[in-house]
Image: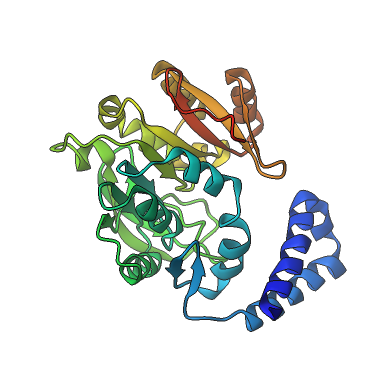
Length: 298
């Protein structure tokens, strides 16, 4: 009971701070939120937490993010509505396995989830969480994804496990060697079709899509949730405008995820290109124009 109360008030405070980022500029507020986080974490430690009947082992710095934001977020609501039993899903940038396990539960034994995560630490948590829940329909790959297959360095985020990158942003110094795979290379001998693709790979998203051209042609019903981060994509060496043109050519419509209003709204090509010019980040769901999937539930 005490944990629930602490988490409730911490969530309220953090959502207010996220909605009004200038609050962080006030030292007394930043200090207060930092102390609150430390205290809440000290009261909520556990080897495993359970969300939607799924057990998760988590690094300490991920516990609050997952329990308070990811689990109750808009993307989770969308995924539960548009992904069906028996479908196949692809997760790029699996982190510790929240999306992998959620999708494995949704698609069931008749579906498959292929999941890619290059960080050795994250991959151990990912593997542990999949095994703890007994999912036999998950294929785990300790690899990064881009527009070609090669070997490179993964730059490890110092502030958590969700900002690791396969390009040098001059922000992080610690690296590990990792394999990078092009999705069309990985599935070159497979006729498997995918219904849902979830990616958040810190600047490599658009490159990954360039590298799955054949897979998308084989998967006419594929729906994608993509991190739209123009500045990171430019840092990786890809042109965000090319991604937009590529998806338009593939007959996709774009929808923007509005976190604070918990809504999905159509977004025009012109507005996306404005976001590219101004380096504005957002998250997109991409759905084929002729798709039966309706977003009226948001």
